Image 1 (cartoon, rainbow, N blue to C red):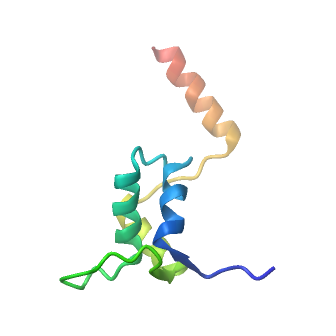
Image 2: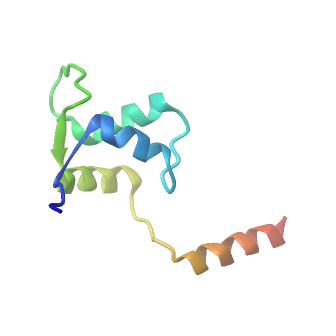
Length: 88
């Protein structure tokens, strides 16, 4: 099966609402998806939920939005959650 190298706005919205992103509302997920896909240099952009952008570009913009982050293993995440519970 060939891997896609592009994503549509409408495909990103549900993904952004799931773990690990957990964007709380569909409206916020749509705004973030549009920001990731649409050309941010344009002064006016008409909504097109089927508009696509390259995954590499989307990832680059996402890294700029989120900033530096560390991906935890399941064990590391579990340990941190246990430590948080102990503090409370």
